[in-house]
Length: 86
Image (cartoon, rainbow, N blue to C red):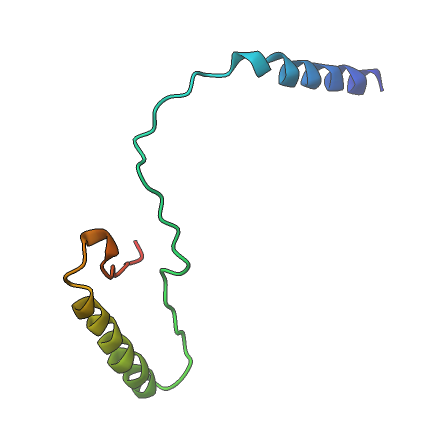
C-alpha cells in the first residue's frame, strides 16, 4: 500500500513538475494538410472478373478522365487529382 502511494506521488510530481518547462515552439514547414475521405478502392470479389472489369474500368475510368478534361484549365489546386495508395 505504501509503495502504491509513493508511486502515485512520484507520478503526480513528474506530471505537474514539468508543466513550466515546455520546449519552445518551432516553426513548421507544413503549409497545408489535405484530409481525403477515401484513397483506396478495393472491390474484392464482388462479382465475376468480366463484370467487375465492365462496371469499373469503363464508366468509372471514363468519368474520371472526363472530369480531368473539364478541369484542365483551372489552377493547379482546383484541378482533379488522382490519388494512388502508396
